[in-house]
Amino acid sequence: MLPIINLSNIVKIYKSGSDDLLALNHINLIVSKGELTAIIGESGSGKSTLLNIIGLLDKPSSGIYQLSGIAVDELSDDELSVIRNQKIGFVFQSFFLLPRLNALQNVIMPLIYRGVHDKEAKLCGMAMLEKMGIEQLWHHKPSQMSGGQQQRVALARALIGEPEVILADEPTGSLDSKTGQEVMDLFIELNNHDRNTIIVVTHDQHISQQCRRVVRVHDGSIVSDEVN
Image (cartoon, rainbow, N blue to C red; front, side, top):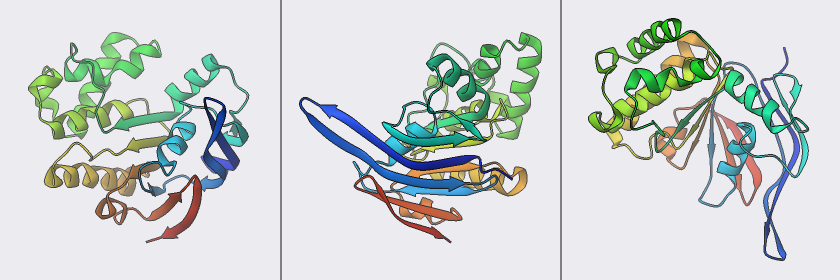
């Protein structure tokens, strides 16, 4: 079986005036289906850059990236956008819910972009909100929900398109420890029961220790890759 994520010698260089900033230094990483992986590192270590490249939000300066066997390095922005919508679900620290839309409308946005009929999208959205345990809040806007509830909506939105991989960037960073653990418990349940492939970027050691695999990044390089 092909790995879902296969990074080979990935380098990322940012221009800073006349200087070059090496953000990622020959990264090699393979992630298989059903893995729950944490990427950890200090601020500025390159972990968020790595996640952005995995999520097709940024392109490497050099190296080869295959997502589910597709070589994505040379694809156009439009082609990357299609693959991103179909294969990747995102969960962010700041939720990024649209404030004027209610929970259900936020959740079904990926399906609307795919051209799914409104009625079908809403049925799928309600089922996903129920899975997250917040179906009763379907008509609430983000400002009417707690941080934990908003993150559950964001997770429902990430899952609704049945992505091959879920990328979570500091998903508990804006939450108190109890609520953050509830969100982490959801990730673990999804991984255990549904075999969702999940990558969590975090600086929280307590969160990373709950993942089966921990990849540590330092100064743009992977310095350890361990299984808990």
